[in-house]
Image (tube, rainbow over all chains, first blue to last red; front, side, top):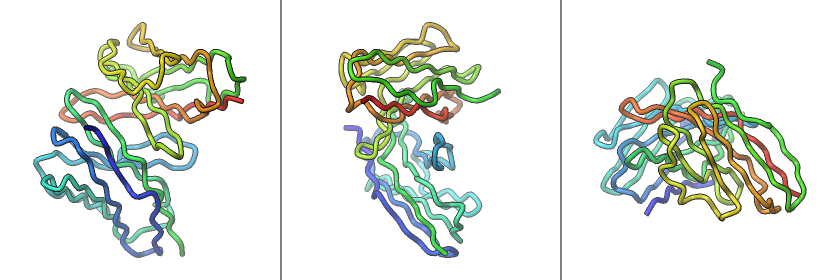
Length: 110
Length: 114
């Protein structure tokens, strides 16, 4: 089946690290993505990871993939108030179907 | 390129009326996706096209929903008749497959059915 699950809310203090988690069910996923949605806007791609990798780092962002457990996480180092948004996990299922999770609302407080 | 363009940005309509949402994808993209976003269900894939051909419409909730892509630069999502439970933000996204499929999203259409 095609199902992507995320927790709905996360609240962190400015300067701390944030970790957003995601689980998916389809083992045929080729790529996994993290998108960011700011208020009143569409989604924008933050980063992605190929399914045969287990880690990818991009500046303050670290993506970890545990393919055996079908678990994906996004770590944001030194979280800033500008990082407050909804973060979506997504998987690409052949032949290019993009399935999104429910989104995690990240709130950063001073 | 101006990005993915959706119209209208907001639509308020009465129950039973026909609603048509429009999307202009980014030029050169061969994939087009329609999503619906609600608080309860998050972002649901309704249908997607490749080279103007519908590939998977298993997410379309009912026969009241239909989508077309008559050419590479235009797509519509129609709801007839509309119901209050159709109220949501509808997003169109386009993309092209170069290793991975990055989807570029429009600003969305906020639909309210009263």
